Length: 183
Image (tube, rainbow, N blue to C red):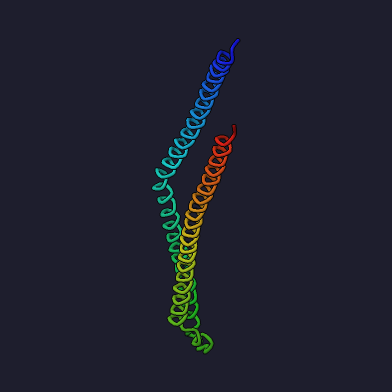
């Protein structure tokens, strides 16, 4: 066998090996791309579903706020009704004892008692509403902080991915140089 035949045989074998290797690498790359595309589609589907749920979450929060306000209104109303009964009972006691010339009962003015209770109920109701507003504001602030953290995470991941890509490209470039300079 001559050197030319030997070289030709080597080149043919080498070419077939390179074709098989390139075919395998292409299949692997296609499989990787398909897997990554499926992952991206799954992420898009999941985030689209979450986006569709926003009105429901918003509705729940609104219902919670409405229920909180209604509960505060009910508390104040129930308390005022109880105070009306106490004052009415007290007034009837004052009326019964006023004929006895008992000066102690003159110290208790039902009108003044009612006014003091009204102030107390108004203050208590304001306190509950302010507490509800504080909770809502804290929730809103926490959502803004969470959103900012997510945005920073996204930006950090982009920077990390870019750094990794640059590193891999650098390694590939160096490998090409080494392979092209080899005899």
